[in-house]
Figure 1 (tube, rainbow, N blue to C red):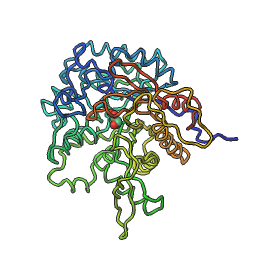
Figure 2: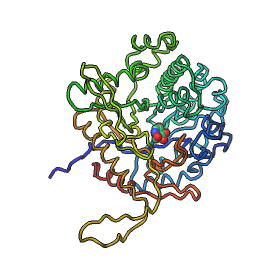
Figure 3: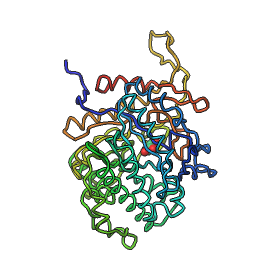
Figure 4: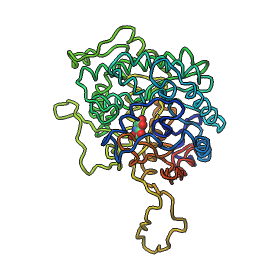
Length: 464
Ligand code: NOJ
């Protein structure tokens, strides 16, 4: 009998984290402060005042963390480098101790047989650069170029897979427009649009750094988090409606990356607030990449309205969500984002660079035995973090990855967010995304039920 939900033999299974969310050691060995160190220290910015100061103390515990990954059968690890560890002030003054730390970290990964997938920028901009304008100013680009070149030169002998930036819409949109994320700014549209453009150029600089210094076999791509639009009903009209909206929400990111220019309609919509750019910058932005990383969590429903126009539907209050309430349960987002990206931009490969779910998990959940007729025996193996809800979420999303592959979309890998519970930005430590539970006071790690499930998924190379 053929086994269902089987993945291709060369499919990449991994887990993902980011430096400011797990490392801690925020001031160790010459590290400069990042905008998240600075922001989280201000009252009221994060839930319960959580800061990245200690986080999972991964800085001191990485060998044990890598050993645990191995035990869980994980072979691919997406992590990020903290820019302010290498260049504390975001200029060209390097911190050799920071380079030393990542040398040891990467060597240790390799000892544990983990293939590194490295993100150059996962939101921890050096605060000193923010003080000089941050992403609003082109000055950020000079600093990023120095950092990206140096990082790829130093570690490119061991790292072959690079993500340039993580989630431009999150760190620009939430950081500079909505003020919910560091640096907590609420800038007018002109400044926000320019900040988006600078981020796009930084992506281009990252690609160029990998091409120049990455050595043989180096590959690079963006980790993007488009707002995913799915058809309400999977018929031709609703699919077209969803795709129209999806394309428009990416007119400033995926479109220029692949076309080499901003769409005229975008520039018109921006009017006097349009970003200022040069032809050289557009050429940098549009350098070919090797893959597109997609972070997938939720989706929005669209349909063709009565007059045929695309319309976005409001979500009913009863729509299922995680305890991280922005995260509504739309597994088919995984399929539609891969399909629309392939149809619109034809990336050579797609990796689901993040997928996961946040709950307020606690160990030893009180056993609530279902009342099933005739079965009264209590569980002989209680305890642990029984995150059946996370397994259910992951299983559903993974089936949609499988569907993508079955339909010929170039989805080559999947990184579960996250290996362990960690600093969830403005949500502090309340929302837990890990498949490993972290008891922060003791830093004890305990794999949740989902970790055991994922171990078996990887081993069998199919959704279980
Ligand atoms: C996306 C971000 O890249 C990651 O840092 C964050 O923790 C997860 N989403 C969950 O919100």
